[in-house]
Image 1 (tube, rainbow, N blue to C red):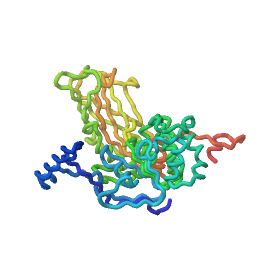
Image 2 (image 1 turned 30 degrees about the horizontal axis):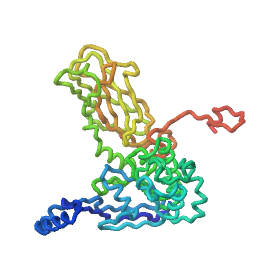
Image 3 (image 1 turned 90 degrees about the vertical axis):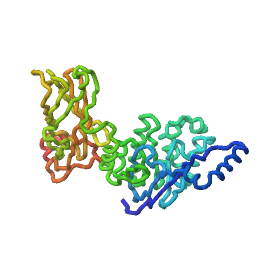
Image 4 (image 1 turned 135 degrees about the horizontal axis):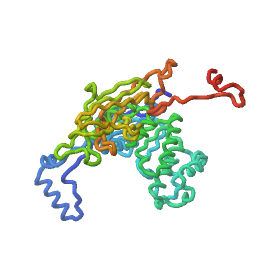
Length: 432
């Protein structure tokens, strides 16, 4: 990968004025009255009636050639505004941005399309805007149409396309005409599941081809898979910029809406509750909710549960969740038909030997479920934080590839490899 910078943003700030006096005046009488009011109130009062909104606040970063960078953050964080500034759709209030190479911007459905033109004409128009020659566009035309799946309607004006057809064709043009820099804003939010998978696969190919991509999405799994690096925006400013695993973990931790760690959450039934006291309590065995293990090491959960009333039966479960909110693995004593039955008690000791879970290095959370043997009744979201550290699992002197390459799980199957038609025994082939 080249070290040449393709996108350089320095102190980008975009300010909007929100004024109480910004109302429409359709008649001459309204316009005169409005002018008189402004003179009567004076400039000081006008200034007080205006407020300023910083959509971007001193944003600086550099993206080098071939990098694929994710932009994450809540709605209103400034992600789309940043792409519009970089695309020259709007200009910053202060700061500067420089981009080297041809740029393709897919910021909303049908960006750059002329509604009255057909799909065929829009493909050539979009390609021309990107600086492509007619011969280049014609060479890729069939591939673009096939990817978009709109061959039957390619000579129909795009104003008659559905939103899904619009975005399929727009994405196909941007992905196949080989610009050096691509800006993509939530394109995967439109279209069916099949098209989304197709887009992800194509974006992966594009990224491997060395193009520079800024990718905005609320699909954190897609960001983690496609983008080795991410930038977290909040309130128009950069909160974090670094490896996607770390940035996504910080974003999820900051905006986790499931409540405080270890807080009890009633999810079903009332057989285990008494009126006025329906709260369970979880007490980790070592008073810590943070577990640290090496990749490939056994994992043990041990804790005590205090119930609101004496119980004669109790079951438990656990769910491992990735830093991006994906459910990785679940386990349940109820499903395995293992439960504690005994004298009535309000205190129960729970130990879960998970064994050597095939978790790759990363940060995970563990939800704990408590039930009455028949159903799960209460849940402790993010009761434990599980930190898995890189380790030489197989004893060959090297750690496993990162999550961006393998995902959150690694596997250790039994391999049998031999040359086709070989008479060697499988065990001998393995040793070779």
